[in-house]
Image (cartoon, rainbow, N blue to C red):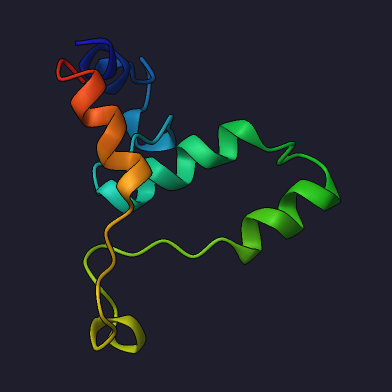
Length: 82
């Protein structure tokens, strides 16, 4: 609900000038990480350039064996409402 309200926010005069709300999951994640970094500094920009996000599994990683992280499954069991 909160995210949908965020998506509705646009500029009154010319919506094509922004703010831009990305719909792709990779870009939503990219923007979330950007909010955690000091992206207006050189150090933050360098860190953001090193971040790679993809929709789906790109060619170098699609042949690798998938792994299960048991610690992540534990949280799902503890909090089934998440």
